[in-house]
Every structure is written in C-alpha cells, then in structure tokens.
Image (cartoon, rainbow, N blue to C red; front, side):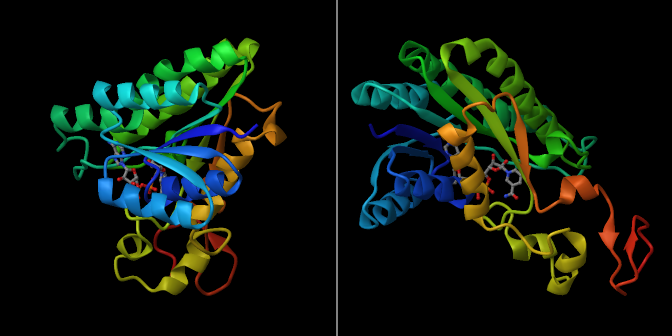
Length: 267
Ligand SMILES: NC(=O)c1ccc[n+]([C@@H]2O[C@H](COP(=O)([O-])OP(=O)(O)OC[C@H]3O[C@@H](n4cnc5c(N)ncnc54)[C@H](O)[C@@H]3O)[C@@H](O)[C@H]2O)c1
C-alpha cells in the first residue's frame, strides 16, 4: 500500500528535495508551503516525473493551515510520514543583545511551534493506525553554539528535545520520531554564495571535513531512510547531516596542507 506523506516547507531547498524523493519512492505527497508559486512549480516537477502530489498553501505556524493539512489527511484517510521541515534563522539580528522580543516570537513560530501544532494535529491518526514516522528538521546549532542566533538555536534544541521525549511516549503505538540536524546545505536560505561572502571557494575544502557543501538530495536521503522501515528500530534521535562539521567543532585543515588548526590566526 502506498504511503501518504506530509512535507512542510516542501517546495524549495531541503524540503523540495524531500518532497521529490518521497514522491519518487512512491508516496502520495502532501506538499505544504507558504510560497504558492514555488509549491506549484515543485508539484509540477513531481507530476511530470510520474509522482503523486497535492499542495496545501499557507503559513504552517497558523491554525488555519494546520486545519487544512488535517483536512487533507482526513480525505486520504491516513498519514504514514510527517516531515516537519520548516525552519528559519531569520528574522535575525547581529547579536542577542540587539534582538527584540518580536523576533524571538517569529523564530519560535517558525522553528518550534509549528512542529508541535502539526504533530499534535496528525498524531491521533498515526496512533489509530498503529504506525507512523515523524522526521523533524533541527540543525547542528541545536548542539553547537552559533553566536548571533541564540534564540534560533534554543528553539531547534527544543525540536531535538521534543523528538526524544515524544519518541518515548509514542513508541508503544508503533510511531517513530526522529530528526536530522543539517549544516551547509546550498539552499535559498543559506546559499553557498551568501555563506562564502566573496571568499575563495577553495577554502571550503579546508573548512568542511568532507570538503564540499551538501546537496539537498543528501539531506532528503537521510530523511527517506529515517521515514522508512529500514529504520524501524531507530527512534528518538537527531542525525547530523553536516559533512563532518559537528565532529570537527572548530578544527580546520590548514590551507598550507600542514595538518589541522583550531587557531583563528593560522593562514
Ligand atoms: N540550509 C542549511 O544549511 C540548514 C542548516 C541547518 C538547518 N536547516 C534547516 O533545514 C530546514 C530547511 O532549510 P532550507 O535551507 O531548505 O530552507 P529554505 O528557506 O531554503 O526553504 C524553506 C521552504 O519552506 C517554505 N516555508 C518557509 N516558511 C514557511 C512557513 N511559515 N509555512 C510554510 N512553508 C514555509 C519556503 O517557502 C521554502 O519552500 C529548516 O528547518 C532549516 O532550519 C538548514
């Protein structure tokens, strides 16, 4: 029987790759996105490739959109996979000292609140089915400090903590809950060009242990694994998909090729 899979933020970036991957694997994808045009474009690509997709357009942090997702799931009569992918480090400020409560509120809505809302809306169906897989999108910054984005990292640490606790709660119903922690995806939100800010692209080889940026398909394949029966004994974990940056934690290959450094004044 084919699966019904909900992907939030499923039009562009990592979410777009997840929608395309799950559809290519045979799922009927409910693609949820705030950007109507991008959602239509990705849906058309999926359909052209022979996949099945339906779009729900709206802001996933609002009750209206959550109700629309729930209604779409009800029409299908089931939901097998929920990928809570939406997240953003913006609205950003230079430092926490410069930040404003309105920014924290929006960061909360975009990074943590919708995960709770959509999960709460769809979980009863998974529990009734006695099966389901939820995959949340966290970030390496849930585990590593990121100066200037303290609120963003706090809410994503919340996503990983929610993932662990909910997994323990719903395991008895056959529902698994996991997350990925990306770093360095070349997406509209964090494009390679914007991250390099004019620096020599060769530096990437020294910066990232695997020597290159992630392609969106690299994140989607880990989500596909966690959502699949291949991961049927895995629950409660956040899997970094980061080219090794979390392991390196501040260690870089020296540009002169002479080993590694953790000192900022090395060439
Ligand atoms: N890009 C990275 O390197 C990176 C690193 C760490 C974590 N992440 C996480 O991965 C996830 C995806 O990141 P990305 O870089 O692909 O993002 P992106 O901004 O490039 O794409 C996000 C998608 O979500 C949609 N969207 C945004 N806000 C929405 C809302 N309120 N309701 C519905 N749809 C909405 C956008 O239209 C777009 O299609 C996020 O949770 C992000 O925090 C990404």
